[in-house]
Image (cartoon, rainbow, N blue to C red; front, side):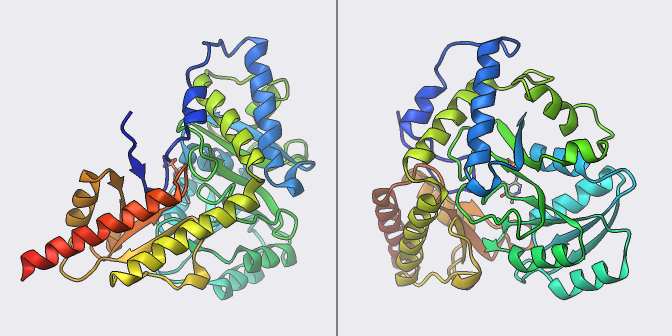
Length: 367
Ligand SMILES: *Cc1c(COP(=O)(O)O)cnc(C)c1O
């Protein structure tokens, strides 16, 4: 099979082991075999971060990362609650849209996409608005590759005793998540980013007490986490699940455990991303954000002068590499490279060779 090197932030390159797991036997989601599979995955997901293992319950959903984020917001922000959304990119803005679509009370503290989250404005809101029950933020803002300062945000949540809900879709499995220190009530993530599973399954890790302390905030039947929580205690789900994608996720989680867990993955990602950053720098391509504020998962780079994104993308695609465009207002300024998935050092070396060929070729034609 042709090996396409996906450098987009999910879906990711599957390892052969995970890909083969998709070919297992057909299974009815009402049978005990499926219930055991679900319970095994739930247990492993809660154990990716040892700190979460005893206090958080993983709820599995069939759908992409956005499905898990929406289910989290819809179910956990109480009907009479109020959300403070902290945004500095596409995914923060998507959260604000979802909370508004669901007609929940909210305020938004937004920053420009190239800026950090505005902690001073967050503190002002928390100090002046006692109606706020939940702060919502994006851990790794994939729009730019910025790892938001959730440690500082979490401290504010603790001080003002409001719960934090996080979109960890592109950080879960590779970046540190400090559950207790951040006053984290729940985080949403997906199978097919840093966990290296196939697309189609996502999940929310929720503090266990929540389900017994207060009723669901959901005005939707399909995305109500409370219902999933009840039924998944025995391993069953209210609706048909992506059975084969579950198989792949189980295998991906075993692979993560055997390779040293999220800390080892963090280190491996860092090595790959450093290599990409240094190689592109040598070719005169500059990063969009400083290294201190970026994740280990993705970096955005300024498009070199005289090159359109399409030129770069199409040239690299011919060689088997898929890079990723900037979104919205950054469309004509940046491109992005994610290093999640089964990406090897040889792949990165080849990528850099092709980048060089592409730039050399165009320089020659320009002359
Ligand atoms: C990818 C991503 C999402 C959305 O995930 P989908 O699987 O495309 O629905 C949400 N938030 C962040 C931070 C992401 O990187």
